[in-house]
Image 1: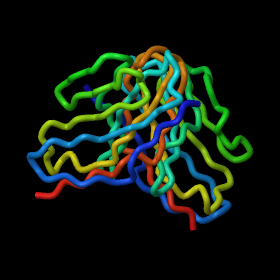
Image 2 (image 1 turned 180 degrees about the vertical axis):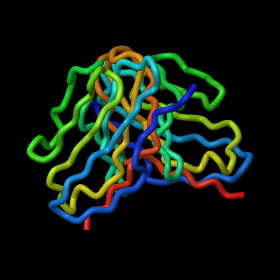
Image 3 (image 1 turned 120 degrees about the vertical axis):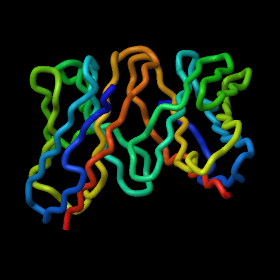
Image 4 (image 1 turned 30 degrees about the vertical axis):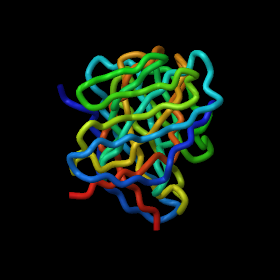
Length: 115
Length: 109
């Protein structure tokens, strides 16, 4: 079974530039998550989708971050404009269900460096 | 949200058992106890979860205290490949996962 795919793996940009990350979840998984992981910390949930609808985006900085999941499969996370403090690893995860103690499967992440 | 407390770091010798503790004194009756681990340069991976009873799987065992205010992840024979950050997470049904800083496990040959 193929895992969660993310691209690019690494990205370096200057502050005030825009950047986009792509995620392809495991086939059949209805729920998709984007996390931000700053160096030395645990992942922090940014947004959760159930199919193509948003379930929770309470921790997404909506003035600069946006995310979409068209057709309930792939998802993109965008930052516009980027700030220095956005330097982090952005992780995508998927799960079969939203409810219940279901396992989340994580991708390898995209490491973003903002200069 | 109910929070967890874990030691920042632990060391173990290869081939020996490892007991990773987690305190969660404010756990609610519907909170599941999840453990994930994150190997270097990878995303987290699921290890095990439980509610009240002890659990075993091919990766580890989870021992849950009778009052559920603490739990212990047990790796029966640590290998170098088990070196990772281990996260103990409480998760109510339908709620998201809140990661702490976790415990960084070092395995010495």
